[in-house]
Image (cartoon, rainbow, N blue to C red):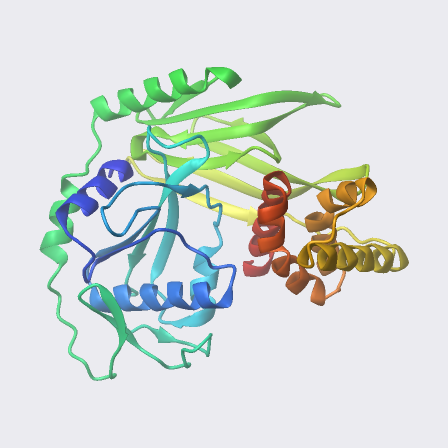
Length: 378
């Protein structure tokens, strides 16, 4: 089993960006340009490495390889995005890898790409400035469009295999990971559980009992063997259950208006541990968008638009407007789920203004975007 933290270190130490590895300071697939560039790199790395894994490391300074980290990126539906835009889509996964020196909630993103049986990958349809049918390959550290009849050479398998073999996990790394997690999360009663005498899952959370059920907030869950953060959230409520060979997380989101909110199940993630030292992760979207009175929604939607215009023009807000601003991201999200199609664009338009105005409200914006992304790509 590969220790992903050690793999990232080996990738950074072994080579600069090349035909099997890329690094980015951040990833933005919420906007068309960022999504297009991400798909271009996925396509190029898959085509340039038909017989081995390729990787993108996110949260690293390009100039000096300094690990600065990014926000936890919860996107179990990233494969759906790749399938929607690429022909012969490669198998793609995004994992969040914690590093001890990074602040709580910051991780390094690791995108793993595996070619679809060596088949040529291409864009399925137009996106941004790239045309449907375009084929990309890596030219050194750059993803470039190429002609269809280019000869694909397998030049990286031995190099990648050597890097991965030097990143294999061992008992010392596992124990160090458990001790570090337990010591660093004493604030919320850290727990560990061993599955199949091999896998170790650690989690910490704030417990809440409601109607005889136990829910958790400020949840942090990590698969220690691979140093992969499975879940991290300071906002949502989660239920956790497990058997001898399964660990299940059900995530809930809070939606509503002003002081009236309800919790709605968003997604169920089940990790099944097997006897052959392997595991599967299956996710299922549970979300059913709540429906509200359209007259009320029209009023709230127009009020949101007025607030957004004031932010854009830097007009001071009243105390009541500041309270309403806290609900702006969730209100736009609910409006979009109730067939106010323009609400999504308005929500995305609010991003730079909320980021400047109030970091706490910007966090609520990011949460709304995360929910939207999961629902759309499902």
